[in-house]
Image: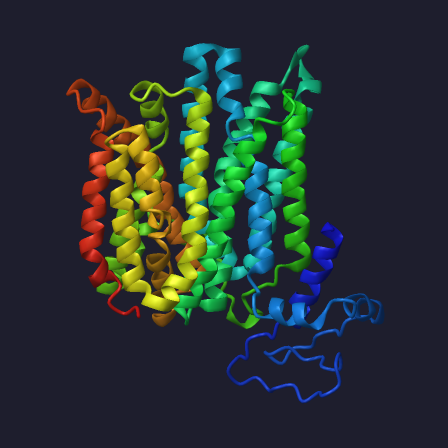
Length: 468
């Protein structure tokens, strides 16, 4: 089944028409397989006879459908990647606390999380520059390969010893660090690929991004749900995780099409390194400043750290199993929101959809601030909330293309902003929770979310003024 899918996607990739560059001569070949010119005029080797014979088995209708969806291989690779990582997402916390104790375990986890976020802050601008220089696909492959290697090493760690002691703890810490880091870098490249294909049509970009994030949410929910069914042993768990990431790697290597033509690539400049490149976004004009402000306000609640989990355990007295069910439910609501986003955006436009999704998010946080049951009910009522950033993110790509910002650099700056929010968010929300508990208002972090989301609702029309 997997081999058949790879063949289908490979044929779709070869069938996708490359973008015509200014000054390029169109190919005049009329016989299938005769064209040996790229859209920029460079030579391209035609498929071999064996490849043509293999690909001819794919139904033409399916080929035509896939040729209009160049993002499909990327979306499936993203799904496999997220499922693989989420299988072990909950493993380090329980294992390290058990092995190191209730004090040293959390200390190590906090140190790893802080180091990963700091690395992402520093690397995002550099990786964005590399994506503009070497292309999007090499960055995508490198992130997938990192996850495959580090999870494979962790699977083997019980059998690797130093001074007669297994190296499980160091390798598990390394896996948590690497996996947290490469998620942001993977989606930096993925965002640039989507933007390359649809940056001049924000509605299509939002729809493609919606399906991608729907699969990501689904992958997270599936991975967390399956993690409880996996064998208890760490080796088997991390080995399966590595195998799934490897499947995503092979699929991406064979089928994801490089979206950046060689003629559009720019030299890599290491001297331009700046850990605060997110501030560069503010220098691109008033419209971009509105969009960045809206993106920051809309995404801040995502980076609450463990606040919601701690609140559910302490204030709602939920069991670990109930907390897992809650997060799975939220993930599945994200799938529904992002799947529905494409048709809704086509019907009512980006501005109206963003306003509706932002209102939905206010409803959700109002439910969380009330009770467990209200949270579940309001998550169903405000089901569009998880898709609230689609319009903003799409318009940032479109605005960047309008003012000629390289998409890799733009994605790097945006990832740098997300990395800073990842550092600041847990500290801010943790303090709000502690102060709220002392003031007998433990819902304070969620009240804060309601307030900033209301602000986002009001500035939305200004930020999305150019959207339809």
